[in-house]
Amino acid sequence: MRASLIPVLCLIALPALAAPAAKAPAKPPECTGAPGTNQDMPHLMAPLEKGGDLYGYAYISSCVAATSESAFSLVGDKIPFIQDAFVRDVNRAPVAQPDANGDPVVDAAGLQARLLADVRHVVGTAKIKELVITDIQVSPLHPVQTPVLATAPPDDAPPPPAPPPAK
Picture 1 (cartoon, rainbow, N blue to C red):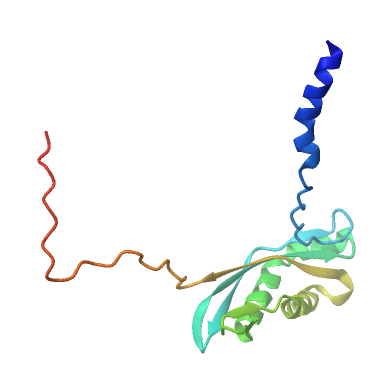
Picture 2: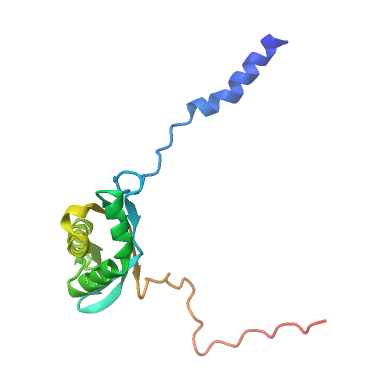
């Protein structure tokens, strides 16, 4: 009986062994500070322009790594001031550059350097190890809509038939 089960088990296990290994989804960047020194910052909205007009907003998530637990406490106390500096920075200068189509693309490296300078200015240079942008989501004000596949009937077309009366 055991001998007859071996081919059946092989047939069941074969598809699982033959399936290609799926790529693990890319892990979002994280702060590399010691435990107890990483502070997630409130989300930041940065305006994006296209041709001098408002195109949409970039929603930016970031994390600040302090150099020590006491510096972490100071960062937590100064979050409103850090947030104010971030908002002023992203509204003072653009955070994106146009791509080949003219649509804005956020310069993550440049923005990260600017925000790091802001947080170090507010808290103190020696107290901040790094700032990491963990996520950027762009939301256009007027997203491209799906084209209409059906065309409207011509003006001289007869009206559609009336629906049957309800019972």
